[in-house]
Image (tube, rainbow, N blue to C red; front, side, top):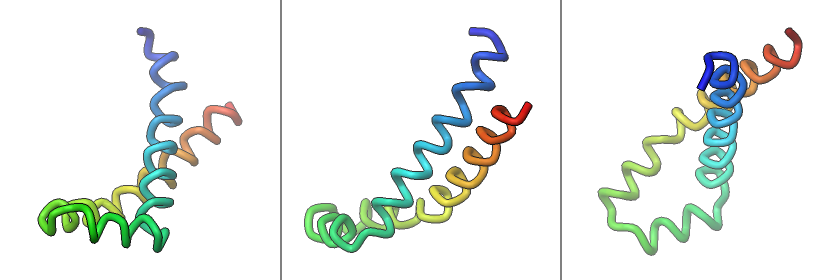
Length: 70
């Protein structure tokens, strides 16, 4: 895998992870489902990734836009 290929794929993976985590963590249905089905320790760990999801969404999105612009 060349650095150019990695530079094209990694931002999309980051933006995708951020989009999925942000969608799941900010949707009432999914959060209620997680509260009822996950153990409390795993639920807290899941909620702790809210900031990481938003950061990955922003950084991956900007990085993807940079690759499109250049």
